[in-house]
Image (cartoon, rainbow, N blue to C red):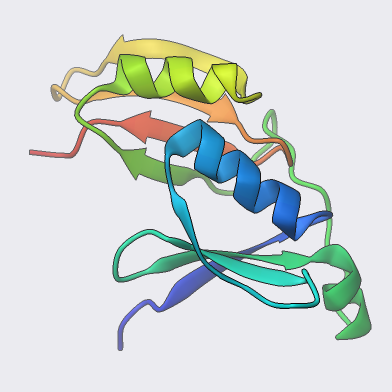
Length: 126
């Protein structure tokens, strides 16, 4: 098996895609004409978003994300975490943890996206 995509449930898919483009430099791969589903170009595994209302129609009960009590995180790798952090904050991300060099040599920082999802900005693991 291979991981194909991860889908996050959000109130507004087009606004979320625009935020990820501005904050992280990602590009939209696909947006359904309904606006209820979209994907970002993130390599072989897509990061996708589905509207709360669509999930409710499908019998699911989506909940709002909480950056202070996350159940997962999105990790975006970059060689320049400081620049990525500044760009994300300028685009409306909420700073959650400042830039830090970890004991194993990786540089990290955390922000929350416009929906409350926790996003780690990090250098690639060696």
